[in-house]
Image (cartoon, rainbow, N blue to C red):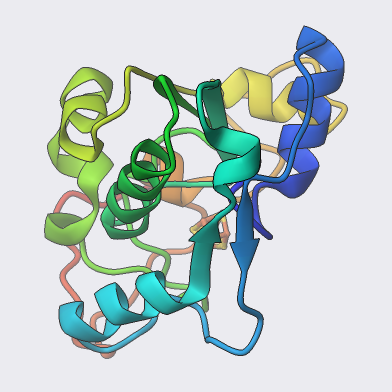
Length: 187
Ligand code: SF4
């Protein structure tokens, strides 16, 4: 089951590859804005509650694998997993179509500083326990490159920006935006 809408393409591919049936168990309200760019935690949590609803008809009594594109703070994942359990799932697993997001983006995507990025502060097992899933796995960095048609990531000259997964920023971020540069590497 995808976390809509961001998880849909990856969930379709995951279902096709594993031969596990694809289903929509979560309905998304398209009139609510993106959750992780809400300015406050209270706003984000209200946003998550209003944005997604579970369809217990497709969830009750089933082992569910949720597929999403990323985990940023973990706020959305906690709510979604709880919602799926309340809808009657017997197990809830999660698979993520990006490597762990360990660094902020300085190039236009509004991600938070490192202290708010869950994967910068916890390993995969700790994140799984924190968000309440039976198992959690992220695509590997090379796996992501293979999905893009490359054989692997070129370590010295990466083919794409992947700084939010590696901390290797192709262009050094400045400090004029007021955000911390702590822990940032540039090539
Ligand atoms: S890949 Fe680069 S540009 Fe894209 S979100 Fe991550 S840091 Fe930002």
